[in-house]
Image 1: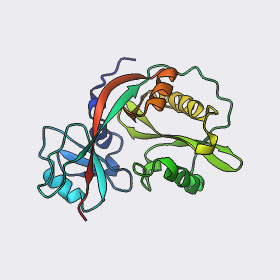
Image 2: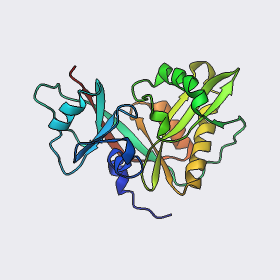
Image 3: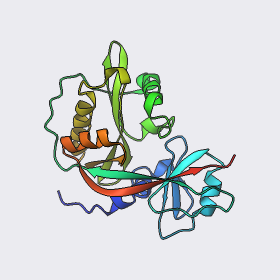
Image 4: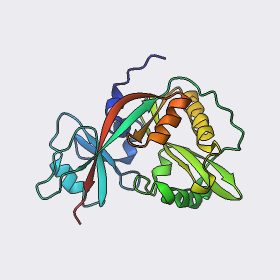
Length: 227
């Protein structure tokens, strides 16, 4: 499958202009996910982002611009820079799935949110789970591991929220969920990718073992909104 990967250089922008345009707050050359769906925004054409940031800061306390460093409103603090690795995979993963994996529905919503709050609260908003399917493993009547599909473009789908309850780590649940999710994405004729903080060495090694490769570094600029 030969597909131009240019969209992945600005994945938030292309997600908001391709698949997820209905979840977009549009400030012209600056766009953000609606605050119920995600804390991310992006821009193109070296746009002066200061006006859009000021407007968006009235809707959400803390949020991110993904990509180039944004220009800030004068009365805002400088954004906090985080560097992520964008990783991609082109082949199915050869890892055995021995657990029962289910696609989560609204009936599982409270379980999903409770698990997310343990490790991933900043990036997950009330409707993030509506951006794509989320998959989970239950043990002892409790949701103990999840993985989902978040940002989507015409050709790519981001794997997100790879979470295992701290009491259930080391059992291969994350590997099985990633394997399952990758397979589901390939069945849609799209290519899976993901983002991970470059300092998060454990998950990076896990992804590499499963067959992901580092495509590029990508900056996430955290903006502290003004109340």
